[in-house]
Image 1 (tube, rainbow over the protein chains, first blue to last red):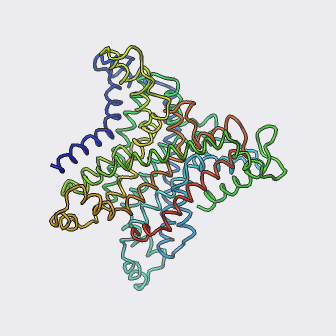
Image 2: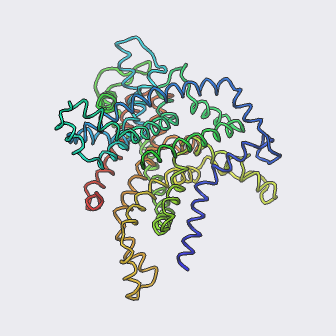
Image 3: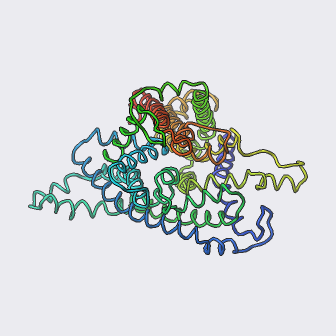
Length: 253
Length: 262
């Protein structure tokens, strides 16, 4: 009896978690502009795909997420490996602190850093400041995933390679790196998603020419009713779900 | 890491001690004025409000999340499937999830349209731009933060303990309250802290769902750095926000609970 009550409740809770997104996706296929169902239509997808602002935002987001994803994966992997080789309480403490720091604080402090640098160098906010900011906050996620993987990694594998005459560099690239490869790929995909999704930090450090997709969506959502936003959102939801599922598969390998 | 994270914080700390410049930058002399301004009743009210909303959101999530975690932990073979179902929406875009509620709750949104068509209401209900909408957004977005650690604690719990209590004559509710809840307390505490911190620093949710009315700490910081161009005050406010988060976290780490958990 009690079990059944719990199951009914859990079903409702899961519905609460999933329904808003399902509704959002469903209404992206609505022929009517308003929230009244009129019939199936792909017109909002057409409108979304032909919107120049959305296209520019998407391009910026892809460039940023691509570069920041690769850079943060490399740095994050090396950081996790370093922390695994030798305990670095300050580094790992900083890492965890950066994970729980409110995004808005990370954003304004990076903005302050950039403005401080600009006092000496005559530069201005743009795509590159967004990339640096994204690398800064993605590293922690990469390191977290890699650290979890390294915890289960047998140290003696690398030691054996060293005993057999491999240089530390060789032992790392030929023995440890192949073992870590799935976890690195998983962490990279996670970094990609985290970077692609960010609005708060990006909006603070972006220049006039570096509007990302979330910034365009935010502006559209602010302006009011537009099923185009639903269509874009639906595409993002599907894209993210696929990437995350792949990432989790890789992590569990 | 140190370059990207600690250095910016140091700069913000320096900013918070400087004076606001005429064109928005920071200037000498050094002063504590920004910190004193936080004590202004207007800003203190925002602090209390943020703490209050984060507390209510945490309480709501605990009530809603614990049974869900219990269900997943007891699901046997299908555990992983249910866990995935809890986490999947969490991995889709934060902005999109918040927009979904905007779509459902606004005046021409789904709820109001349906109710109007059924002639249950005369005009659209003001569902958006209030504390309730912000709380809903926070609970919806951060519920998995709570469910995950509680699930981890419950999963490690030996089911024999609950069975023993039941065999000794305890009814289901006392078993829950006196056996299961106390034994999973570390997970509940960890979940509550993991939930409280992002709620306290939330910016996007109060911005989109709360409109201009529900100003929280995150919005104050953003506003000072952009529209108001008062960097010293914005810096001071963001450091106080950071300090509050760190204190809550330190409280967890130093408690008995963390030692059991790690």
